[in-house]
Length: 151
Image (tube, rainbow, N blue to C red; front, top):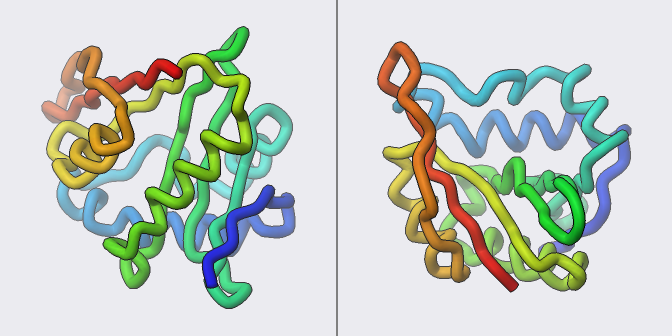
């Protein structure tokens, strides 16, 4: 059974392990992950400013969600991830639906995702997000697609 609930700082190691597994394909594709994505101190500090949720199966953390209020009722989703063994089972969809219910006051959701992560593009568009822009490519040619969903 899948459970989604607020995480606590004691969940940090398990969440980061799930994130490392979930993003291995992107790291292999791009040669790197997002800045500080596995930095334990950085992640622990997010608990001060972000909503952090853990996704569990049979009491084992298999994924997570981070988001932050960027002002008013606007929220930025920093990450949504599920370990590879649990992907393509609609868990990500359940996690996003949970997030939308958990923060019903949100009027705008924003996120970004890598340009070659076609599965992510499809996933977010299926949930009603629209591509609204792109970041400038860095020195390696890497860039992000920016998405929004108005409620």
